[in-house]
Length: 609
Image 1 (cartoon, rainbow, N blue to C red):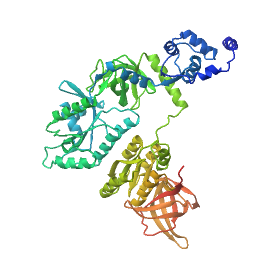
Image 2: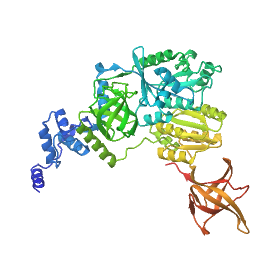
Image 3: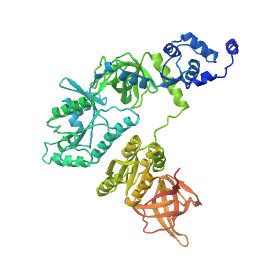
């Protein structure tokens, strides 16, 4: 009661806010100043040469019950801005330290390159990594000797290279989608006897979308069927022209199994690293990126961190997204404790309060109390607002963005049924570009739309164009969650017309096909005047009366029709869900057999907005 009374008395002593004079108005807008997330009231006061006690008194007058050691949140930020007549803007702790680190040019030193090995399955990625490290990872891991932390260091000519062992191209793109650019160079492994394969093209697309330079390692040159020149021809079709052919892509012929030309590959990695002028500041509070994380039964939450700035030592407090902790111990890839980890060094860290997501920035802070308070502040902010995810472009959005001059490029991922169609579309689509917008085919491959395609589209803001291919229900769901648009076509001119209209801003309304569910035909009944009734079991989703259906046999669509009647236990119903039996009639019944699949869907007209 007394506290409330004192606040009221203090407030009443404050003079009423006067109207701004002409001189004050003429002074123009207030200057904008950025402050670091995690700053206390005392930090802000000292930055603007104000006594912390005076700033606290001003805030108390405005009704804030604060002390000099309190963290500045959005509410305090606005109040302090009014008090000191400056527009304060809060930037993340990690962003501010990165900015500061690279402003201090005299403190920048070269750092080892971070390399990701990618390529088609069985082309020798793991064997190459084994050869580089002069060890057999597979045998050691099977024996439980080596601790897998997802990244490894190799020493060559007294210089280090860090190799990231990603579980797949999707993981590479997921890290990038979260804003964490970990990799400096991609080594693309292509088997000399096998050539460019679907996952090779996928790896190229992911690396190019991330704007990461590629070194090609043409592997297995020791095999009888090896033909490196044919591989180079195939790579040229993918836009990777090797240096000996007048291009810019470094290429090395190797045999990982025979350890042939491995030194030359390492030499090229270090040379490209020098050309890229990779530098960092080792003297700021350590910062890195979470490569992978897990909950260990004995150790608790642990994570692999690749350090990018500063030097991490045991005992330091850190913040990592909404998680935090104190580095209780650091381990290298062999499970050995280390005393410190500098730039480009991968290290396993113990001491997290919870398992952090991969791709999250890891940042050292002055103390565990600061780390805890920043974590609480971030969690509170996350509860109030949902961060707005960058949504991939749709054709309907394209014209609006062109008019506002917000876009110069439409990125597309092409999927087609056969390789001939892939090549036609890959060559054709860029020719539809205009002066205002360029159509860029990030990836073109055969087969149905996959999760990897959707993740690449999500990370790069692309649309997916399918020609005579399908989108499995699971992939439709992932695309919906990732807000990726998938356009399917059976006639090429309709595809090209849509893109032409899109870049011209004249897209017509489209008919969208929404998957409902599947039922399998168990029995067929011919009932007098009623006609043919199918006894079915719903095996996925639901079937709905009046929905359209595709009759499928051996994964081939025989024809399309509509559900005219639907019954469940002799009752007419509007829908029947998964694992239930039903009797249904079709508007058109021809060549139907037990075991046929009925795939239900609805069509709806989607108007441009």
